[in-house]
Length: 503
Image (cartoon, rainbow, N blue to C red; front, top):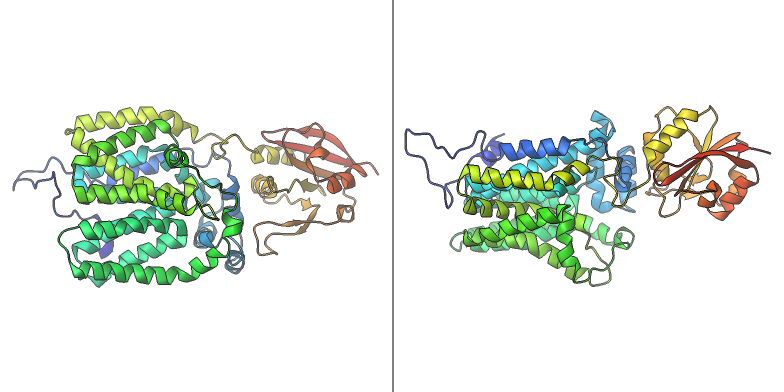
């Protein structure tokens, strides 16, 4: 508790802040500190229609992993997804307490994003003053990309929190370099960064800059910093070693980025080109402020993507925008400093924030749409599940298209079906959980997997005139020999057909 209170206590006045005269209230103080309103604003935006978008492909994997036992999770991450293993374990415990509804699955991300906003405000306060901290925290809350990944049952919001918290704890440790406890907390935050996503450890490129520029040279600061980082990296080494053996499967789908990718990444991070442009303009207005603070924030925001881009020119690419979301807080801190410097009164700052709210409102509203977690539409698993539930009869079985692109169909439909409605997966050979993997395998001889079911539901990708065409040839032939399609429904991106046995 003492540590938590210390995090929220204001530091010595920064540039642009002067203490209020004795006996007179400081009109520039904010109820609850500059972190409160950004936290509440971010949380409100995060909770807006949080349960309405259908679970995306990766979110379905998170749900599947959360339903496994701790032993099964550990066995799986030894083969795949080791870099997300900590998140899976956290979500496993969370769902045991709060269930696995879309709200429950996504709530850890929403809470983490709100806490990140608090850290943004506190860092801004330390580096540029209270008003800049408040402005930066509120600007962070208004970024559509922040709301989008507060809705995501994946570790990205937790990564952002760990990265931002590590920067805040580094600032505190530099204030008192003789405090072993502060360096230990900083080291733990760095460990948390790596546990939630190893790529985010590129945030460390900015930390030596802060140590070098923060006040006069001090061996104790460098000793504490180097010791903390060394200890953190040593603790993460087993995960780094394991993750390196899985990169081929984890990242082989990511294309090698070209030069345009370094510019295009920002509109993807912000989920809005207009918002990205507006905040970059505010960032430019901060260049006249404290040089050490500006340098730290610029390196934090710009250098990690450049490092990842450079590494991705080799044999394996890691240049995917979600992996670099952790750079947004640094940009928000700088934008808050620029806004506070350019708009020196509260009404002026409020006007800019109101304008940005209106500018980003269409993107924010769109984030609550059913298919918001898909770039160009997606399979409507909930609609498919409703069709099956409506016409279900005891003894029904089901067949899924389980190729590489449609591998999530079984998870998606099963998630939205009532939990007491169980359908035998006709062509399932070995479930993913039995294989300690994310993917299951199909029956090698489909004809032998049929058990004479009178009715089989068929779920395949796309709008198929002939539902059998959506299956691999051997499976389609086995079904055609004994079944005919009685009717079909075609919700977004899917064909759901009922097959009746003919012989």
